[in-house]
Image (cartoon, rainbow, N blue to C red):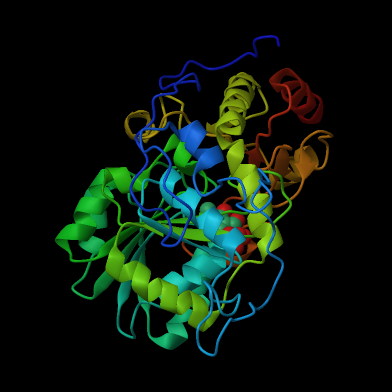
Amino acid sequence: MDDPPGVAMTGSSGERSERSPAPRGGSRSGPAEPDEAMRFETRAIHVGQDPDAEFGAVNVPIYQTSTYAQPAVGKPKAYDYARGGNPTREALQHVLASLESGTSALSFSSGLGATTTLLLTLKPGDHVVLADDVYGGTYRLLARVMDAWGLTFTTVDMGDLVAFANAVREETRLVWVETPTNPFLKVVDIAEAARIAREAGARCVVDNTFATPYLQRPLELGADVVVHSVTKYLGGHSDLIGGAIVTSDDELIERLTFLQNAAGAVPGPMDCYLALRGVKTLALRMQAHCRGARAVVGFLQAHPKVTRVHYPGLPGNPGFEVAVRQMEDFGGMVSFEVVSRDEAIRVAESTRLFFLAESLGGVESLIEVPAPMTHASVTGSPLEVPDTLIRLSVGIEHPNDLVADLERALG
Ligand SMILES: Cc1ncc(COP(=O)(O)O)c(C=O)c1O
């Protein structure tokens, strides 16, 4: 493969194989623990995924069942009803806990299902501090759903640590971080956010959807909880909707396990199987996404019609130093600005390899204009984004083909 053009960067370009050891546990009732010293790439394939005991199938079977026959009244074997538990789901939870360096994980029907369930741990009057550039759906949930249930929140630029610390109140129970953010790829210092949350007696939650545990492990940096839209890089093939929560907080996981069953936002076994299959190649895919993004950024920076490029790996980016410290590489998301709304729409409608679509994190490259698409729900709010902004999810196609596609579209 030819070397793609690229921008200078620090951080590993994916050659690393020494990863932190697997934590004890995983989800609570998974298969036997493999060697804790295994590297990330190995754990992605083996944790929770022993060959099936009866036939030796090397993939976790899709336990497509809603209920389980019980040998005696009130004495189920392992599971009684599939909203409460499913072996395919357990396997996924087990590997996600390991990859995020947590002791427990729960998977959900969507990223927002995970977020909603986490917010259900709060009470009326509780307060959430939210990054001012979070995923629009997270903001919408707090601003237009949970407000009626008495939750309050404050949005703040978490890059400004003074403003961040001032946004925390006595009633603050969660500090909700997303890094890199969507769509500006701003970087939040997770260790600092965790410190601010801890001092306020609140939990620090990090939405790690954009970075994935391959590039960034918030729990190792002091965060209490990680949430994911599994729909994105973890699944990796644009063929499922899913979510996850990972933590090492036993009290929280007990409450969440109850809420997962009580509120019911559980994933189906087929989606769990697809997510498990996706996770096996997460390391390889992330290396390719990062490589492609660097090539695309190098091209965009030099293009006369591009007025600004947002990418955590640019030394001019205010979050660059923090990104170098807390991420292994800078990820596959890039956004850039052009001169007008019409030009943004024209470019987004002109690419051939980059499909015009919402979402991100799949093997195929996607392009979108956030203002009228993914971020339409935050129009008129503090999270509103300029309509001259274009967001790219750089897939794993050959970087040179992606650059050629953008070159053709920009003209
Ligand atoms: C960063 C982030 N978090 C959460 C979500 C919500 O995930 P889902 O679409 O799986 O509900 C999204 C969706 O785009 C996202 O981008």
